Image 1: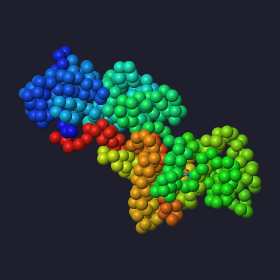
Image 2 (image 1 turned 120 degrees about the vertical axis):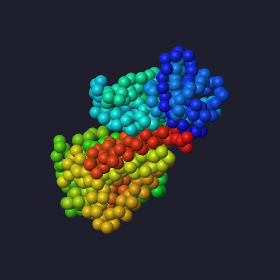
Image 3 (image 1 turned 135 degrees about the horizontal axis):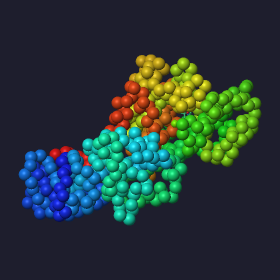
Amino acid sequence: MSLTSCHVHFTPSSDKVIHLSGSLLKSLQLSGKKTVHLKLGKESITASLKQIKRPGHHLYLSAGVRNTIRVPKSGSVSLLQANENDIKLGPLIGVLTDTSARSTAAPFGSRTGFIRQLLRTGESKAYFFAFTPRDINWQRQTVYGYFLNGQNGWHRRTVPLPDVVYNRLSSRRAETSSSIISLRERFVRHKIPFFNWSFFDKSDVYQMLDQDLEALQHLPESINNPKPEKIKEMLTKHQFLYYKPSAGSLGIGIYRLTYHPKQGYFARYRRNGSNVLLRFTRFQSLMRMLQGRHGSGLNRYVCQQGIRLVEIDGCPLDFRFHMHKNGENKWVPVGIGAKKAGRGSVTTHVKNGGSLLTPEQALSRTFGDRAEDVLEKAKRVSVKLCEAIERNFPHMLGELGLDIGIDKDGEIWMFEANSKPGRSIFTHPALRAQGRDSYMHIVDHCMYLSRFKGSEE
Ligand SMILES: Nc1ncnc2c1ncn2[C@@H]1O[C@H](COP(=O)(O)OP(=O)(O)O)[C@@H](O)[C@H]1O
Ligand SMILES: [Mg+2]
């Protein structure tokens, strides 16, 4: 396998012919060959080979070739040579997403900026495009993709099925529909790497790690769909608990339950934009309140040991570790944000009054000169946690947003793992470079999965 970069040009001829500059012919060791097998994504063609005089690495594709394998545009791209007669153009990488509110300028609604930035990061290395489930034609094995047009806008091109799919479908509900389940299976059948596989439910992650001793020591004790007696038992054992919807996000529906032997039971939560604290003398009254608010929805709740987080100004602090797989298929912490809870808030979400800090700012105020050691330890643990999730999950993962707590003894805890992590930490001015790095890691990992990686010539 060898990788060569070249410049692609288009010619009008309808013949199935490609012209290569002398130095490109030489570096691909094709001198003297009459034909070559050229591939893009899952499409291929056998074309006759001609040489043209021109310095540098140039490839001229006739309309006959270009239209058959559906090359989306001219410009710089890579050539991967699997064996002497097989050359792959690309890679062709698709970002799968969807939205209900779309327009010509913003075909992916509020996600358009994110998609545009990702495509911009990737376009110098690959044919990067975005698509929705509706854009796939499985009979023809093509995708009607969205490419950047150079003026900040979009143009559509029909391309073959891609080499890699980065999944950013945004609806948890849609992702469990039979059409999306079969879509994913089709990509697998075509041997097209597809990551991340799906949203995670909290209970799935806790269950996945339940037998993994290395990860388990960083997970608060968690029970899926606990019976009231179990909640009571855990309250007595841990004094306080988090009771949260397994498929929830943004802190919605989360309760912090506390037990004081003398004062009774407390429930803290967010209601209509403000923080509420209720006291109950009897456990049954607490449960009645929760059942009244959620009914059978409580079957999809998890109950978790509360962790005494480090605090700043009396407000708990936790961390988002934005983890990526890099171009060598290794997990790395790429962006780390610290989040301080709003006063009286159960969670640290900025929407609930929380504020964003750099981890250095936050940890120096809580651990003094131990701050650096604590951060290094948290990074090591985050990598281990990602590795543990990956080895216990049957599908491909390349990006995870871990919600990490650090307790007063400096121990590291994971509250949840998000498989479609948001990017709000990167709005902090000191974390913008990490945000760019995060895009770069997605691109590099797609390159790795496409196998367009290796010694460049
Ligand atoms: N077991 C826990 N102990 C202490 N704090 C917790 C615990 N679980 C959650 N939290 C706090 O609540 C926040 C939201 O919880 P999380 O599990 O991430 O749910 P969501 O999906 O709503 O983000 C966390 O970031 C953390 O600040
Ligand atoms: Mg969270």
